[in-house]
Amino acid sequence: MLRPFLPKSPPPSSAASSEPPSLLLSLLRRCGDLKRLCQTHGFMVPRGLDRDNVLLGHFIGRCFSLGLPDYAMAVFARNPRPDLHLYNGVIRALPDAGSAERAVRLFDGIRASGLRPDSYSLPFALRAAIRLSAIGVGRQIHCESVVIGLESDAHVATALVRMYCSCGCISDARKLFDALNSGPAALWDAMIAGYAKAGCLESARELFERMPERNLISWTALIGGYAQWNRPSEAIEVFKRMLLEGVEPDEVSMLAVLSACAQLGTLALGEWIDSYIDRRGLNRTVQLNNALIDMFAKSGNIRKALRVFEGMMERSVVSWTTMIAGLAIHGMGREALQMFSRMERGRIKPNEITFTAVLSACSHSGMVKLGRGFFTAMPSRYGIKPRIEQYGCMVDLLGRSGHLQEAERLVNSMPFEVNATIWGSLLAASNIYGDPDLGEQALQHLMRLEPENSGNFSLLSNIYAGLGRWNESGSIRKVMRTIGTEKMPGKSSIELNDQVHEFAAEDLANHPVDVINEVLRTINGLMRADGGPDEFT
Image (cartoon, helix red, strand yellow):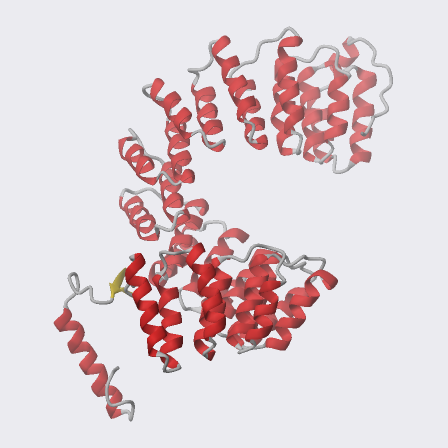
């Protein structure tokens, strides 16, 4: 612990009171390191300025901002008569300094000092409980708020709702919300955000529609909830409604809707958002640029993804990883690996997700030797222990390239329980290269992990059919009927006039079949004229 050298403080005097506080505040603003901080502290103590709780609060705040929490706490501990304002400032700063437990202990010390927590103390202490994910601590603070009569205070109630939602106690948060009958917008925002984060999207939407006056926070919470829980169409619908109601999005709401655009591949809306950011002069944060790169890559415009990436003044490891992954899914494996080389030359340290993208690039481009090299180098060169995601990429790489025995050995040597994705890769590789024995082994595991997935049974049936083993193929189909597994129809989607239309096989109810067939005949005629195939199959 840093223990500052503190000369004995004289009692406050007229000389001390004559020191202008503005001079001290000016000195604090210039403090950029421990040395200057100690010099400023040395200026305060002989003049008795450290006995002024307001000035001391500014000094302690500067300690925290410089990343010196131990120094701050040592100074606080030497104050014989801290007031509630000083307590609140320290309790507020401690969780952000990684000392949430210390903040809770300090909150408990308020009453021991003869003081009474107020409507600031309680929310600051609840933030510490959230950081600790300590529902027991949160409930104790709730009890404290009841005892001192602040449970219905707007700030305290909102903090309590956030605490219960963050700790997974949604029903407790809703009981508290309902008990207040009505409250400020922040209380509604907290409850809607809690529902959205927990995946209770119908409840979030119901509350959202009842909200007396919706604001940007509530709109963003609902959009983000839909995007997070893989309901991108609804996220985009809410975003468009928000615009129609005249609510201007900010960087956070843009991040949420860009995630939905990436899931759906709605390139037109993504491009509109990109231009809107420039028109409105929104801050192109690193996170926002990363989301744009991801959206453009997943929506099929890798050139625009690269343009955003190259235009960034500052890049994080996420920026590089997202760009590598985008190039990989476009089959540009060599370009992805060149991007990884640039990343290393820029002294950006890769993480596990970076290697998932790199191995995916090798897999999509059939670069087995390079993939083996990266996988082997992860622990030895980069100090990163491969996780199940990297093992899965490696199995996929080996399976796609026909190295089935090596892929099987890698699966058997994994230090994790093999998941359905990896067994699915082996089953798909068995289908490509006609290995029914490995296919049967993979299917046995998949029947246990995801028995409802009809595609697994169909793949093994196809393996047998491809080898002319019709009896075995028919037996697999019979098993499917016996256990009630039905083949799920394939689906495709297309973006037209800023809307994404989804088509399922044999589902012609909502689509103009005659028009579709006419367009197909036109395309067919054009392809024949260009020397293409005689017909579509």
